[in-house]
Length: 442
Image 1 (cartoon, rainbow, N blue to C red):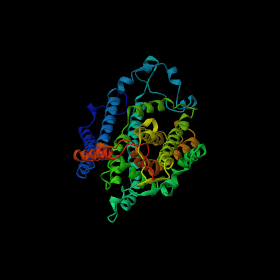
Image 2 (image 1 turned 45 degrees about the horizontal axis):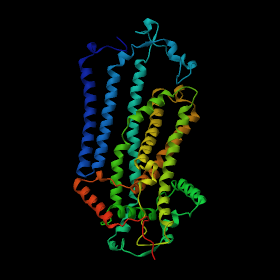
Image 3 (image 1 turned 90 degrees about the vertical axis):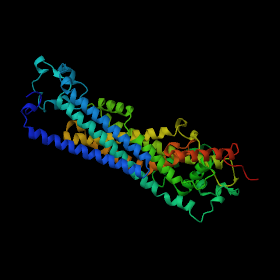
Image 4 (image 1 turned 180 degrees about the horizontal axis):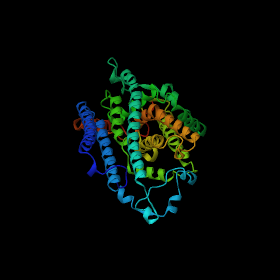
């Protein structure tokens, strides 16, 4: 019978082969058609960024299928790689004392040589299932995060409507007038004075601000005006909220993808799954710390924008306008924040994929599951990360990263891109070069 239980295909009734094949083909075709319909709907609604994200998901599924194919094709080749049993007694997920409780390996190709296979078919099958669960969990967690993040951003639409409502005089937005800087709500909420003490206070405020009311209306209005003034000054009616959502949709295809360095992280993670070290527990704090650091940094960028204006001017001519710049971001690259968010979501998905894989395959009391206290703590941290990232960090990212030097031309169709580029060029021609955001009033 070979390596498995039952008969080979030569002695399996044809009707059974046909039925099993039909079921798997039918499921695959239904799934393929659902993806096709989703793509067509996104095209019809002109949601190009989301369509590209869907294509990215298809690429990940194709990669997953290729990995699955390789494991299936080479499983009997791998199982014939024989090693001494002593080599298999180091870096185990479970202790050697638990090894005697499980079934001994069956006699086979390597047993005849007095050795053991480097990886059994059963272990490869388990690994196969884990990779599938990981990929599905990552896509699912990414979608959930973006959906809830979009819902939070959708609440800001009212602020956009308040600024651009029909009876609002757009010509007054950039018309010269005297504005007392420190009387503005944006400055009152975000400016803490000058000196070392105010700097520390600003960072502390940034840390705690991400947990409640991370973005206020005055923040949104100030950052919106700063973006429009820098990139499309000649079009004060620019739909900033819609642009921001499209930009986030464009970033979604990056978040949902599993980059090579994330697969490398998976390999390192599996390597450190050693009994007694509890490295999984300590590693679970990495995304939490990183998420808090990202949220704090994004909040502090808003404070920096407010300080730039408040420290230079008591009063200004015109509206209070902040100046977008890549200098406020880590390494002068706003995209770095997106890479961190991608890693955070992937690590969180990995935690839950690993947990459910062990739970279903080996049970909650399995030695590979680890101590209950560590497991529960990791799960609680994962839930906290998911909630904070969805309702605070991701919306913050969507707004604050618009304060970079450049805007995303790629999210527009060609003719719209041309218009926006023209707006940006016209704005730069009309904007005098000076060291402040506005000239001080005299």
